[in-house]
Image 1 (cartoon, helix red, strand yellow):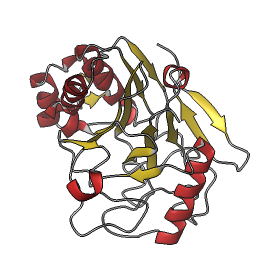
Image 2 (image 1 turned 135 degrees about the vertical axis):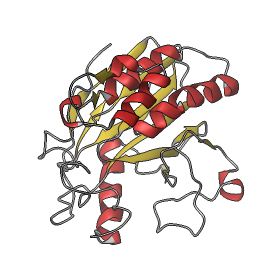
Image 3 (image 1 turned 120 degrees about the horizontal axis):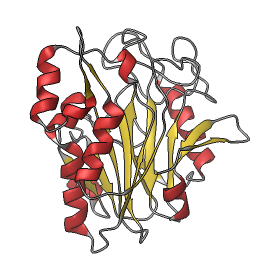
Image 4 (image 1 turned 180 degrees about the horizontal axis):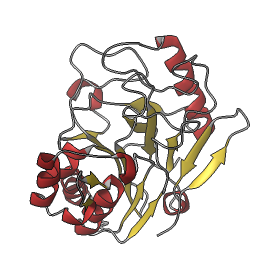
Length: 272
């Protein structure tokens, strides 16, 4: 297991990459909030709006996405996201995606976007992305270089088994079962206090090791994601021991900023 690597593009866009995924040739990255055009409270590389409340301008987000993709070397890739619902559904992004799935491109939201919390990509020049602002972003790909996925895992998704569902779908789609994983920045255990019902849900899901006991339980989301990846058969897992709540300059945090904040974007595409 290796630490994620910080990359600063000439444009000033800062993101993190996985050594294992980079070695396999995948276009990928976990964004930060550095290098964009959005004003406060979304400064600066905001890649998505809160569901309600104060909103960033759509043209700011579009320009930030363009900058992020250029920094990744993916300016000629088509970016796809979905409507994230904190569940365990997996969408498959392939060559007939436009007639088959109503996905969001680098455009305003469509009327009926696909609801999912994991996207599998198996077509060149397609980029799959998930937005986070405390939840865990996870990238998964095979060593062969022809099958990859991005996962959004909040506490509900983790206990619902979104990671396991995604890996099972990857196993069904490809012969290469040697998967690489990368866990991106998320809220740290010290800032993720939960109620007893959430702690009980983690225990029921076999994730007791991720719960810290005390007068008020806390959950280690990164550890829970790592456990789920290991249970799914992965052994090569890169990670970032970075807390979105603590590192205000680097990351957006829904909990720290009481919902008035931007979104990071974690993306992956097949090797060019």
